[in-house]
View 1 (tube, rainbow, N blue to C red):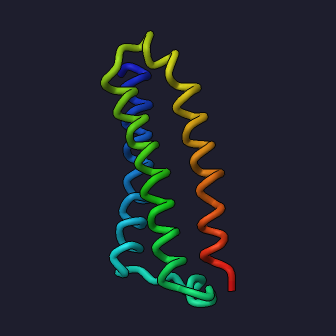
View 2: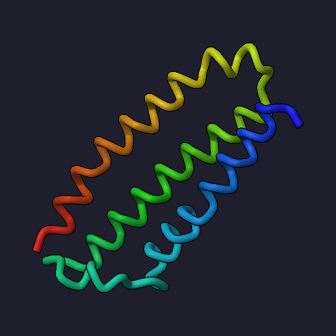
Length: 102
């Protein structure tokens, strides 16, 4: 099996649980106990759901790119894709931490 195909499948499969949890949080189907101590539990739950969907959506997109693009192009794009995921996850913590304050 080609390593780009394998890497893409692993990225996609690892992003699916986070997407499901993010959707469950946004829909109110999952209410973690840690969110009940926040000043505004609904806002904290929504912020966490959006954060999970955003990060796992980027990882899912990276997996699709690994599968769909030629290897030469992927090798050039991977550092930018990983940097984007790291930057968005770091900057996305700010609204999440503000929403989770008690």
